[in-house]
Length: 483
Image (cartoon, rainbow, N blue to C red):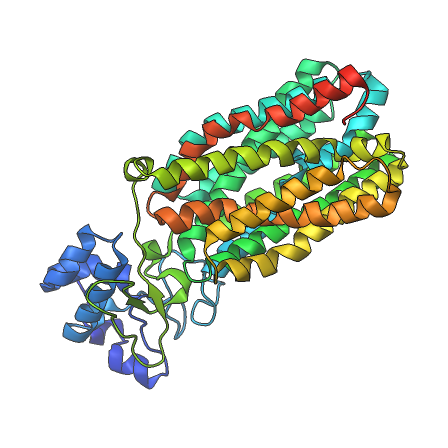
């Protein structure tokens, strides 16, 4: 492709500066690369082969801008506007880092995925039992099958997110979730429930959740804790709102109508934002993580100073899946990722029935679920900021202690509604921490390059955790009590 001179393009570097608009070095990266080869830039020719190296890319862009600036200008995106390639035209890229669009899409998607999780299903347990006469074990088995299918599929979808990006993976996950929720409104036999709920939970675990989490972790490094916290707040906000909305719909109509409504909402809230906003990683669009315009080395050779008016990011070390598997830290993290969901998943699914058995009314039991969700949501953002300042292993230890404490509280035979509220608040904090810490453990230890594959590889080991809800259901059916 022939490179047009600045005069024909009508906008050189001087013209851009005179107009008050400067081509940002990082924004120029992808646009400059292939053209710099024709202009004889050896650094940019090298960058074209090694775009995944943020340090090499930043050096190449600075060299090309100084040696032959006009090929490095990204294409005009409107009258007097220059923006990153591949970014939606409506996004104000010169003012707001596009990573926040990824965070927004992930927030909405994780809000809408909640019907496939325990805190919403627990509201449906009693109405389904009253109409169809099923045992707790039948319902818990559907939860197990969904978790197992999602764990198996995650080993593939994690690799797909790394290779093709989260856009299609999240959108297909949302489509499968919407179809499965609609199918749940038609169930008559246990195998119907196992099939549809298994598909719903599997599509969330292997599609929506892994795609959204990995996307955010790839767009942010310094601000990874707070951005994952915002995404997790969508998850917990859904756990506050959707159980109440489902209960109100069931009170006005029935549980089948509630599932139809949840299906339509999932379709609108997940598929559209994913296709419109989700992108793979900032380097693909000439950007750097966190909206930085310069890169600072964490070690070796000192720092590369950021120029005036720019912000820097710390260059991270990225591990491949094979390298990560050879470390003790990887396997210790995997054990942690298996054990805590085993306990929390069992409690999430049976939360309302547990407190109903302890003498609370149906409305009070639903209120406990809502308080749990509010506690989770309110604790997430502070946790995200704290995790940016302390080692993630300390957060993992604190979360494990909170889970153990709340399990001990369930053994207290008295207390009524006040104790249930205290339990919901503490358990909510522990659950809110989990959503952030799980992805931070992998991202902070092993970097961004193969994060999807690494997260997907750990998923099949988590097939042990869904047996928690099944074990709790078996104990309840056999003994008549959860304790």
